[in-house]
Amino acid sequence: MSGITVLDVTKRFNGFTALDDVSVTIPEGSLTALLGPSGSGKSTLLRVIAGLESPDGGKVLIGNEDVTEQPARARGVGMVFQHYAAFKHMTVYDNVAFGLAIRRRPRAEIRDRVHELLELVQLEGLAKRYPAQLSGGQRQRMALARALAVEPGVLLLDEPFGALDARVRKELRAWLRRLHDEVHVTTIIVTHDQEEAMEVAGQIVVLNEGRIEQVGSPRELYDSPANEFVMSFVGPVNRVGETFVRPHDVELSLEPEAGSEEAMVERVVHLGFEVRVELLRADGERLLAQLTQDDVEQLELEPGQIVHVRSSRTKTFA
Amino acid sequence: MSRYVIRFGALGYLALLLLLPVGFVFYRAFDHGFSHAWHAVTTPAAVHALELTLLIAAIAVPANTVFGIVMALALVRGRLPGRGLLNAAVDLPLALSPVVVGLSLVLLYGRGGWLGGLAGHGLKILFAFPGMVLATMFVSLPFVVREVVPVLREIGTEQEQAAETLGAGPFQTFRRITFPAIRWAVAYGVVLTTARAIGEFGAVSAVSGNIEGRTQTLPLYVKAQFDGFDTAGAYASSVVLAMIAIAVVVALRALHPREEAG
Image 1 (cartoon, each protein chain N blue to C red):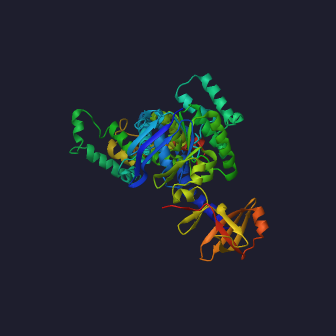
Image 2 (cartoon, rainbow over the protein chains, first blue to last red):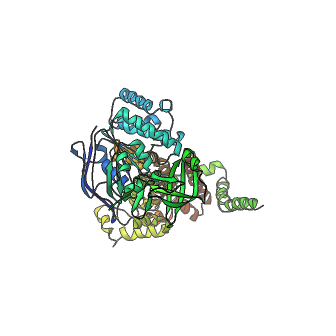
Image 3 (cartoon, one colour):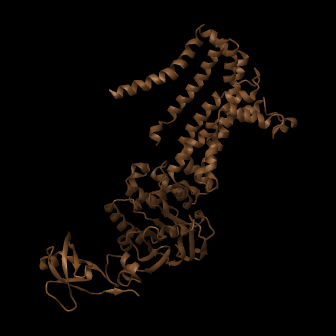
């Protein structure tokens, strides 16, 4: 197990700068998310760490070793790809055994290790199946077992749940979190889904246009975003002029209060416990408020109704 | 209604253009009985022609298989400049008339050609075995490349990258991951290459000198017999060629149902 240090890494593809002088430290044993929109450079950064892309400048350290010039196969990383990268012509068993077979480990050791891993990823009964006979979620768990088989110092996951449907994705997130608590291998997960990042990771690195915008815990990012981009990327946000406010910090009342403004209810969207209220202010700006079902019932909100709006915990960025 | 038009139209076209002529060769070959036909294909010249044909194929096919796989990898995975040009060049043997291929070899290796001097050093290319192999390799070159390229594109690079992160070197990755994924395409390409190598007439005829019992392949032998008014011998040898072709096609169908491979 080892921490990772990325120092001043730059990567260009035909004139497009995917990573622009990026430096970041991933603590040993942590579960870190690289979060950003598509094209932000998050996957490129992961592939540079894996050794699948070589940077145009800068260094990558795994543990205390400079691995910048080392090929992927010598770095001791385990990688999981968005589309599983399952070896289609091999059984689940042979897929998981691949890294050990390459290392010419004794047959008995391979057998024990593969079965141990299949148990860990809950695929015990499926060793003789082929990837085509598995569901997406099972394939991805197989890919994880395969990556873990060689006892990597670092586990790299490139949008691992991106190709799965919403329900399976949620299950696997929780499962990955528990797995990490068991295995404790330094793990980086790339995702464009802020909810996934916040649910799974202890540390989040927010990337945008090849640069790092902020590094911090989910709470830090949410409560004290460093800039406008992070504020609007890690959760829904209202922007009124230069001020930003989260929908759950928008308070509604039927009577005017100190600092409140008038707005008209445009739409009320019931999402179960959460209710979203779309508002139109007198100056033409739109506002989203997040309330609970109880709140809405008490206020008896109807479209067309005039309410009084007050925002708390507003933020401005210079 | 239109379904039947299409069905019988296609069948009729196939029957008229393919089955009828080939069937007729079979029919005429056994016109004078089986023993006559057997005798015609077991003359020393006929046997030598068959052996020569198979020997040329035995060299050209493995050579083009290895080249084809390497070339396909270079075209799909490589980052070499001028790939488009290379890709087009691979198709050249399909576009060029085989006679032109043969003549170009004659020009290159013949007296006064750039490589014509080789003959003076005891390396006789033209009107000899090496020239015939070269001509056959030329015309049968594209098949493995053309079969393997689309499959390589389709499988993508993720599996290879996964193998790399798991510790596999380039050769191990090829042997354990890439090759198993393209093996049916390679097999299909080998079958097509074999069929073309065995049947080639034009290019080989231009460079062989067509000496009976020495530089005469089976297709050349068939033509020679036909020209010499030994029609029974020509038909009987044609049947041998046709049988090899049919065996190759059957082998192909047996190897893998193509529709399933996609």
